[in-house]
Length: 369
Ligand code: PMP
Image 1 (cartoon, rainbow, N blue to C red):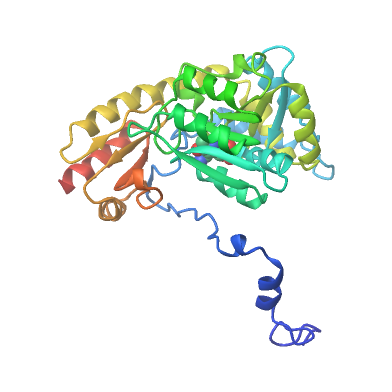
Image 2: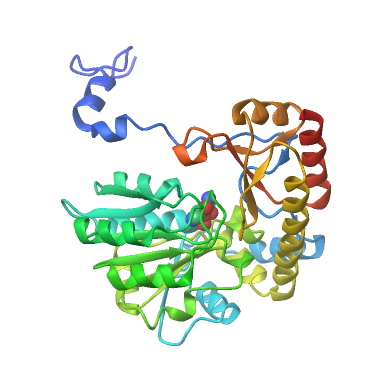
């Protein structure tokens, strides 16, 4: 028996009592983000790329990882990866760049940097859930503004909320998750001009559209563009990045952990980011397959397909929980977003897969009708 005693007690206290005394009620009320297990299922639930890496490229990555000095800390600012990203995009001259352990980490860093008593995070809803979560983690107040019925930004309502709440931080995911649509650039620009604080334009799905706010970074002093490699074939790496004026990046670097990007990720990223042709070809293939998939889905009775600019498509069906379960039983995993927001009633979010995976989905859906 150790000094905590048989029941995990020291000095007569139970862990649950200490937790209740010191962990904030809003954290205790949360449920941890659940990631579905996809063993042996066609995986269309997480907006990943469906393409595995070619064998020759895997061998190159293995060699690069074998060269990593495992006894040393990684390069803190990940300068070589940052230089490779600057070359790949390219980024506008003079803008700052910060890398994160996925864009999830950058969302958290941004919230932590801007948190102060009473500070507000504002975002349209429904949108990516981590904006609300990260605001809550940082002790900020989250204000959601409903999108229009067609999932466009309600700019007048956003502007009124901005004037009322004076948010330190606004998040706009464009294309938006889980609705899939790109917001009109003019609407985003109006919000940039109205907002007193930072506006994050999250382009996690930017590879699947033609427009980007990266070139506008120099024009708006309060614009930060967030991107990730997760949706273009490198979800396992956990590598996201933010582009903004150097003044913003300097502050965010003070909140970033010194070694947030591990050396294995950095080694693999240096190899992968040189594969410009492969990345472009895979994104083009996914866009072509998206067109085929959305057309085939639209032809199904009882399936309403929302327009998408991302590598996934939102659909509405007569009974999402039952359709989700039946798809799963047929070997296809999608994301059931029913219940997460009233505007998403009976909606499923389906990632664009390979043609064979999408055929499996379509066959399963046809069998249900
Ligand atoms: N932003 C949006 C809009 C997303 O949908 C996601 C992934 N679900 C992320 C950011 C986070 O991506 P990652 O942490 O993999 O870069």
